[in-house]
Amino acid sequence: MITRGTFLQLFSSFFLSLLALLDFILLPQAFASTHPIEKGKEIFTARCTSCHTIGGGKKVGPDLRGVMAIRSKSWLKSFISNPDSMFNANDPVATGLLNEFKIKMPNMGLSPDDVDSVIAFLETQQGMARVTPQTKPSGKVTQLAPAAPSVATKPSTIPVVGSAAAGKALFTGEVSFKNGGPPCMACHTVSGMKYLGGGNLGPDLTSVYTQLGDGIVSVLVTVPFPTMKPIFDSHSLLEDEARDLAAYLKGISSQHAESYAPRIIAGSFIAFFILMVIILTLWRNRLKSVRKTMVERAQREADN
Image (tube, rainbow, N blue to C red; front, side, top):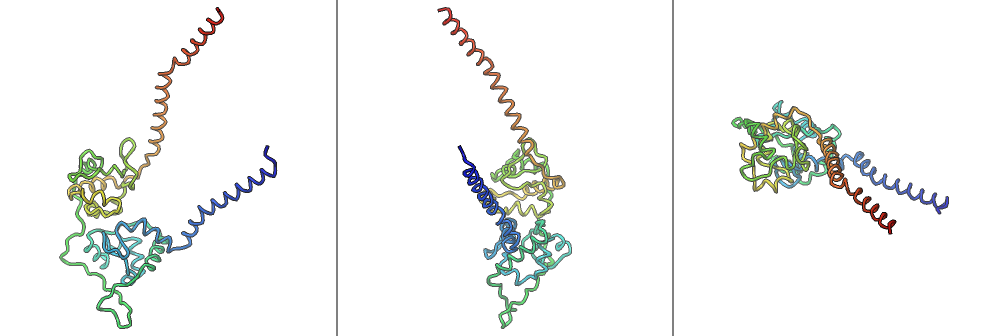
């Protein structure tokens, strides 16, 4: 029997353990929210490393080591917050980057606080700034002149002129990629797919065209994302296939991402109900036969 003192001791231990658990869960979140550099590092790792490195060389976008020495903070804030407006305004730096890397930086949908945190993180990652012949004897590096767009440069992205129907067939796997890559729905889903949708290893791609525009074709051809490179390095998409996929994604970009969880839950209940019906049907006479055997045995014993 548990005494009152033992009960109070157990309750106190449980309460203290609960407080410790809450501290373990909530303190990291509070730390991240009050430390912009840590928050910026998390955002950069999750959202930016697929296209940029810090000291690791160029990828889909430029290496950002020393970026704070060659771009003003206000320009970086504007470009990260809304790159589309910078491209539409023909900003010379943005246009120069577009000409060099052949793909527009997508709008990541970051809040002003998120952008400030990313910039705070980049300020801690400067290392050795890029030195140019314009470096003054004092050792201070002057801000580099923005890259001027080339007059003869063609449009920087591969235009979307593919077939949406063919793109859908490639996405769902009805038609295989010519170089043997897996279908998109193995890892991704989009709104409007039948049954239980596609995979959830990668993000929902319903609105991806809204973020990347025609630049999505270049992304599909180069596949810059770390999780996809091991798969598609030896099974790259052809430009025609990328255009078809882009046309399909462009056509559904105005739809809303759809959750397939209700379908999965409903399907699970239906499957369970059907299974129970099958079991009860197969075993419907089981108890009757057992009861009949017991009754017959009891009658024989009574007769003897």
